[in-house]
Image (tube, rainbow, N blue to C red; front, side, top):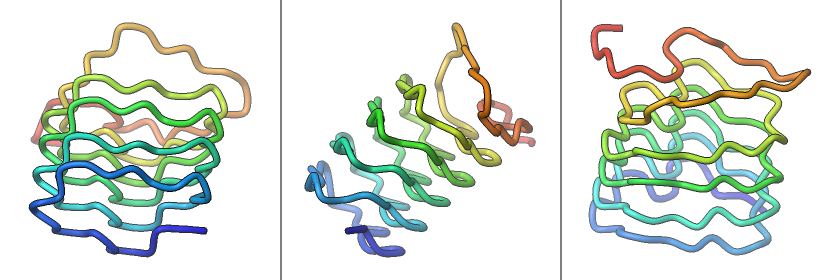
Length: 130
């Protein structure tokens, strides 16, 4: 089961959502522009977060990703200016370009295991000029 492209995009009054445990894929821009979204529960079983999924969710403060997640798409959390923490599972095999661009995440330690593909440029930056 999946969340379709743009399914909840620009739902500006959406503050929280709990996805069912049957979800495995969240496709492009599913929650993009949900400016009041503060909490989302991403269940065990989700393996794919597509491009722009949470882009511009400016009130999203923290998120814990499931241990089943393997893929984070381009700009998935970009412009989430309220985002201060995120827990990345060791199951990730791909983090795409600008996945965390213009967030407030402070990198303290990054441990990268074998076989992970990271498109490095601008993954986590607060520099809006890039």
